[in-house]
Image (cartoon, rainbow over the protein chains, first blue to last red):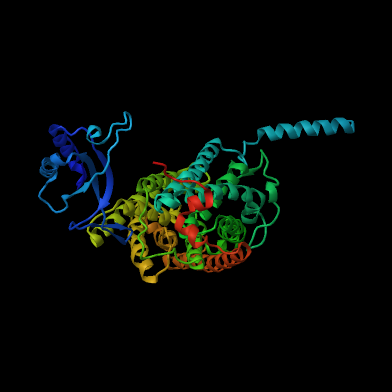
Length: 112
Length: 433
């Protein structure tokens, strides 16, 4: 099992969610985060005082998937989240050791 | 006739004679129009502090300090109200000497249900003036925001009312020595704005800069509050300026009109200045510009005409913009919310231009008593400005140092400042989202 973590532009959340649902992905978690890579921040101005804002709002999406599905999911997320402009984001895949469905106690693949 | 009947006939004759006299208007006769307006104006000016000024300032500090500003304004409102009644009113408006009023009205002695002040009850006059005594110290809050100890603030404000506000008020409005120069200060350019602005400068020097200023970014946490506050100030200021006529008449009407025009002009002037200087107009800028205009028209509102008001507004918008952005950065003091840049500088601009635009040839109502030319009037205005600046700065600074000694320091600890005053001083959070 793998944990797919995608950092995407906030307005792309709905597109990605829809694309993943069409794939059959049943659940995911979204968090509002701040970050930057190569995308430059912006400057704000308050009564003559300039503030440089490096960290930009992003959304972190986490999906737990079985290892067989990883490639398809990566492709789907990338397609849906891409705008072609700097700041589209990144996807990280990490190993998932155990999964539990809290309501029923089901484990691992049955809990995905 | 017998002696008693002669006396009685004489009395009857006298009574008849009195009835024949035309009804004379006594100066102390209550005018309900004036009184109704002044009660309303009092409410408007109080509204300017709570929540007008409170919101204006609160929106500009960091979110961890938003409540501390509201708390300071509200506490000052309560404290100044009581102290004004006990001592302040008498020291400002009581009969005394050229420098301070007497003790005759301590505890509002003599201010009864029937006591009059011109055509309005003295209770109304006293309460109206109280709202001025509330907002003036509240203005200073902006200079020491985000770092002052609450106890030190309360003691400082109490002392400031008695030793700085009341005397200056007495000098200008209470029959004191500045009255002799024919200075025109209709609603408090000197008494309120230069006074508070310069005290603010003294405060930010006495307290020192916020930790991390100017390297650390301290953007305003809620400009929505700030605009709400500025709007309330704008509307409430009609009570401040038009109410200073103490009557519902033509002068009040003109004060109303010039207040609106100067403020509008200043808001636009700051907005366009910023647009030119930085490439984009900002909402904080236009709100600040409006306040600058309100400050500048304050001393002028009883003596200038509409076109003069527009010029005053334009001037204050531009000058205060430069003072709050360039001057502050150049001189390096941390006047958190630009109390000096807007109130002191705006007050001086307004006070001096009052001397120009009060001239009838420029649409004004005429010079102050004893002055015949613009030069003479501006000279008089200058005296008022200098006297206020000098006294306020020195007295405020001294009071601050004494209060610091009594309370073991004017500032909160570094940890408290880092954590934020809302939690550190009040155990509360402004936003529980």
